[in-house]
Every structure is written in C-alpha cells, then in structure tokens.
Image (cartoon, rainbow, N blue to C red):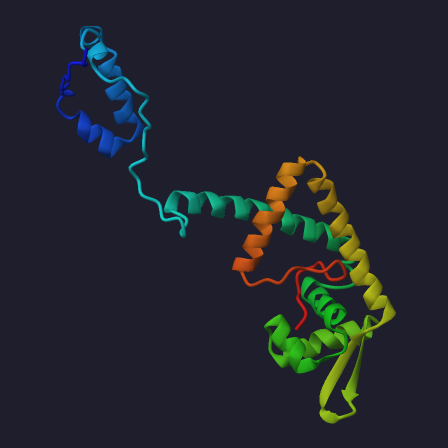
Length: 220
C-alpha cells in the first residue's frame, strides 16, 4: 500500500533559525520532530536518511574569512618558534656579529664573491650602510674586501674561511634544533608540514632552500 503523504508544517520561525543560525536551527528542528505529540505522524513519512548541507557557499579557489584567520594564527605561532630558534642559533656568535651582519655573511655564502651594490640590494639597505657593515666584518677577519679589477669603481666582497665556518656552525645548530622538533611529529604530520610549508613558500615567492644554504637567502 502506498504511503500516505503528509505535509508537516514546522513551528513558525524555525525555517528562519535554520537559515540564519546554522547548527542551532538544525537542533531546534530535530527537537521538534522528536516531540511526543509528533511521533504518530512520523511513520507516515518517507524516513530515508537526509544529508545536512552547509548553506554557506565556499569558493574552492579562495580561503574564507574564518579559515584565513585560523591559517594566520597558525603561521604567526610557527613564526615565533622559528624566530626563537634563529635567535638561539646566533647566541654563540653574538659577540662576533649582529643579525644584519650575519645576513651579509649568509648572502656571501650563497652567492660567493659579490659586489657591494648587489649586497645592498639583497639586504634592502643603502650602499653606505652595507659598506659600514662590510668594514666591520673585514676588521673581524670574516670577509675580504677588494677593488674589482675589471671596474675600479666597484668593491667586491667574499668570505674568508673563518667567515664560512661561522655560517656553517650557525646553520648546523639551527638545523639540529629544527630536527629535534620535527622528530616528534608522526610521519603523516611530517608530510603535512612539508606540503603546507612548500605551499606557503611558493605563495610568498620563496625558492626552496638547499641543504648548503638553508637559512633563507636564495641565490640570484
């Protein structure tokens, strides 16, 4: 025998709750359907499972505001950890170089011999600032400055063995601390981290770091 079709009208205002209040509205609807006085009519309905659909449309190509805030929060938290790791890795050499001076050493480690004007551009400082930094590093025996034999108006810089050793020591300490943290992840979490950081670096225009130059200053 065919099932009798019964139109069940929800209480006034419940459709507004479902559309405007999300899970709260759904909960009220479910509570209303389960009321004792309603049970007699429910068997007459076609009670197949119903899939609840989120009425909030999401673009597959764009992060919505709520998810964006969650991503920003996670990245900021991670950046605090990475900054702390960087600071600790430099602690042993802080009596030799400042952070900006260390950045200059890293650029030279990545590029090899570099013009002063190119270095200033890489560090986003003016040439006079870069020149003063280079003077201090040269005095400390960490770099060599000399006139470009092909253009005497240009100054070239390169690392000394001591300067390269300093960069390698800091890089090793940083890598070891990161390895200690990553080792506490599950294999699935580690793969997810690789995928997330690769996507984040790609979105920010940062090329992948090589094992030789893992400190974040890419080759030009």
